[in-house]
Length: 270
Image 1 (tube, rainbow, N blue to C red):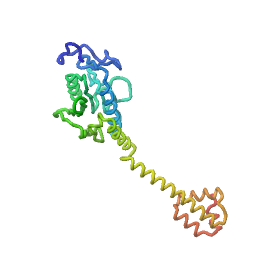
Image 2 (tube, rainbow, N blue to C red):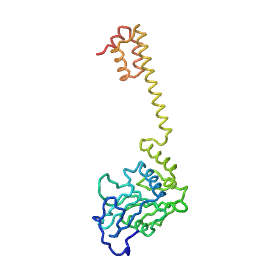
Image 3 (cartoon, one colour):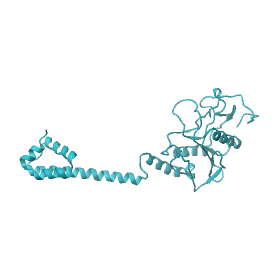
Image 4 (tube, helix red, strand yellow):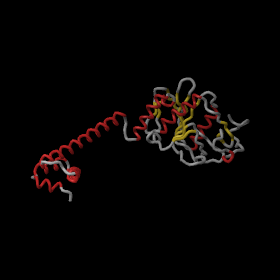
C-alpha cells in the first residue's frame, strides 16, 4: 500500500536514511510503499523458489527480500527473490539483481507491482519473473524492450547468463518438483548430473580398491613363496613402495626372475 495521495510524478519526502533494516517499507521516488507480511501461499512458495534458484550451478548468491537502492537516494526495492548481486555484508545493496522474482497472491497491489517491475528493468535488471498464485498457476516474464511473455505449467523458464539450468514453471510453486530440481542443481555443483553417476563412481572406486588390495596380496604371497618365509615388515613396506612406483607387471616379473638372494637384496630397504 502506498502513502496517501501518492503521485508517481512527484518526489516524496523520504530517502534511505529514513529506513532501517527490517522496516516493512520500500521506497519509490521518495514515497514509502508498505510491504505487508506474506500469506501462507506466498511464504511457502517463496521458499520453494529460492531453493531452486539459489542452488543453480551458475548462481554465486541469491537472497530473499534484499534491499536494492538502484543507485538512488530516494528508491529502495526488495524483490521477493533476488538472484545475483547479493553481497555478504551489511547495508542496502547498490544497483539491482540480474534476475528478480515476485510472487503475486491475494492482496497484491498491481499498480505498485508494475511500477516496481519498470523501475527494476530501467535500472538494469535483465529479467523479472512474476509468479501468479491466483487462478491458473503461471509465470509472467518481463524483459526491457520486450513484450511480457507468459509461461504456463508444463513449460520451462530460462535466464541466459544468469542460470545454467532451465527452471520448470511448476518448480516455482510445487515443492516436490522444486526438490527434484534442487537435487539436480546440487549434484551438478559437485560435478555430477545424476545420482546414477555417483553410484557408478562408487562402484568403480570400490572395484579399483579391491583390485589394488588383491594385487598387493598376490605379490606378497608370491614373494613369500619364493623366499620360503614370511616377509618382514620392512620388506613388505619396500615391496609396496616398488609396486606404487613401478606397477604390478614389472614388480611381478622381478619377483619371478630374481633368485632367492637377489629377491632378498631387492626387498631390503635402502
